[in-house]
Length: 162
Image (cartoon, rainbow, N blue to C red; front, top):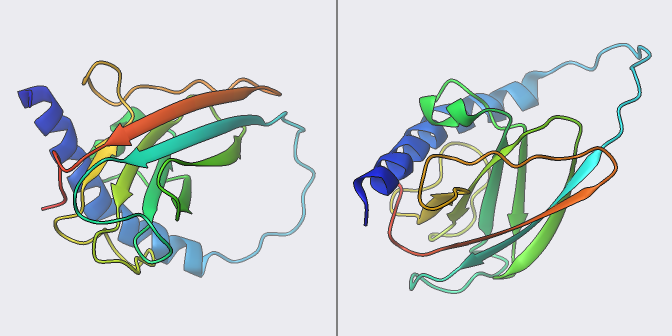
């Protein structure tokens, strides 16, 4: 395992530990805003396939793959909240998400103990990864308006939540 991959993994751990509780609190306390006309932006789609190849157990309705999407590579600072959160209950499953922002950055976590409900960071010991090219820093995923961008991620038990 390269030092750079370990650094990226640790940075994601810090991000999730700091950002997820703030994001969950912010989404619960937001007040509805008055309807105002918004400029029409054409949404692009991210079609994401995620496979967990580790040995901690099966991906199922209790032990899901947690997918966090950010609009900045600075997601590892702990100061940035995810713009979307989704789960997959099928290993190698695919989800589609619409975006008007680009690029986006993705992190995935296997919910080892099960039952994660976005009330804080994923549990200690959960395997995690970020979408990266050649084991480098988080890679941008460009979402083009009106088009679908397909990405696959596979991870194992190499990097874990502390």
